[in-house]
Length: 278
Ligand code: IPD
Image (cartoon, rainbow, N blue to C red; front, side, top):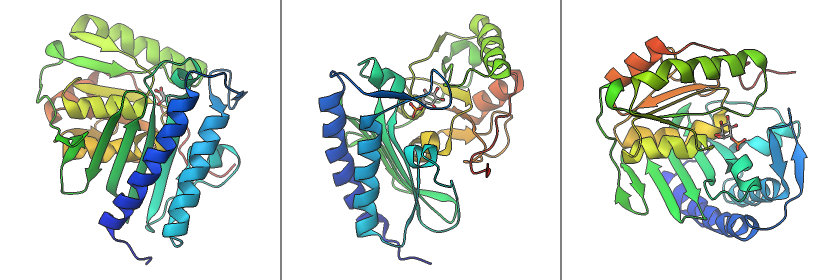
């Protein structure tokens, strides 16, 4: 097993994330080179690629035995392999569509998982200067201030984050619309801001009570998973069972009761898992 010192990992990752943040901040209001990935609403820019390169080269020179799962490396054809080895799971820009449109709700997401468990998570919105951090067992923080979830148990009093996602699969889109239609008359409000990691972090702050999505990837949830957990929140599969990082479905909530209520109401959808060889 490769050597693993969580404090050292955190220190190195934090410096790299701050440097990457400068890249994102400088690029967000400029013209971007945009490429289409799996479909017309699944995009990548030169900034996504540059940030991922910066993070992976910096982390691998400090931790040569560690493994990586990065959104853009996987899109470029690298295998998405999740083992017990220390693995950095990276979304260089979560909320790429927002970034493309210069909407400042976008972030860098870096999680470290060891033995298939989350050890540290950093989610950074460099435009709004919001640094969400968590180390296992040490709590979750926003710019150094300790976070805790709202504790809301009732669906009728909940502000729920939902997302449209970045797939145009007909069954998936039908599931999204059905769930919005079902939930709308039952909740305080529904919001879709375009970043899975930030949605999860806002559940951790208590600014929202729950978030669910079908079709996210491991890199969208890997860092924020720990932020939510350390803030006292619950992360499960959309059907209510244990969360599976590679299964592309997430439901997080401020309480177990709210998670259970939501999981029973949601129409379900199963995308193809991450890591399936093509
Ligand atoms: C996307 C965002 C979005 C969510 C999509 C994700 P990306 O990540 O998190 O909110 O709805 O499912 O793919 O592509 O911007 O890293």
